[in-house]
Length: 80
Image (cartoon, rainbow, N blue to C red; front, top):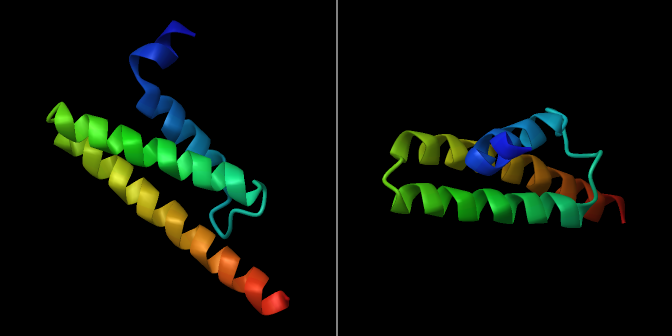
């Protein structure tokens, strides 16, 4: 709703919390990559607005999800 428009970071965090902690098995690769792109763009926007604390939170979230996704990709390659 209207709250989502005011603070897209809450939506990003919510979406990020849906990703399993041990791996991103529940979402297809392209959805994870799209989510990471959105998160990265949002982080840049926060920095431009000098909202550094929120920017840092977005960066930490990005790194965490990217690391999980990288591990998953490696496992997939090893299975082939």
